[in-house]
Length: 123
Image (tube, rainbow, N blue to C red):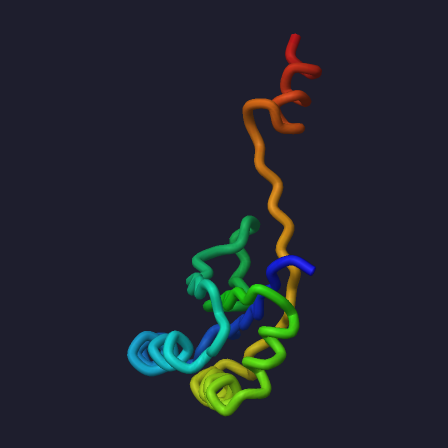
């Protein structure tokens, strides 16, 4: 199995300023320190939806691991459990949604599929 990631999606908080302070000053440092076995941490702030409706989530965090086993070991560790509990505690807009995903990357341009498609449909 290839790399996997834990995705944590936070609903829009009741008080964005309070959430951001807790997230930036407490949660991110905790995740960096206590999530053993991670290879990368990506924190994203959701700013809009394509149709202009309010986004269902305010922040999305992605924590990458080399394998599902490494992710599960982290989740079962004291540091993993403490970090998840803290995520739930600071998520004032509702419980965060946690998912485990396997990433697949597609690249476009040059000799990629997209590049070949562009030449097929060009006049």
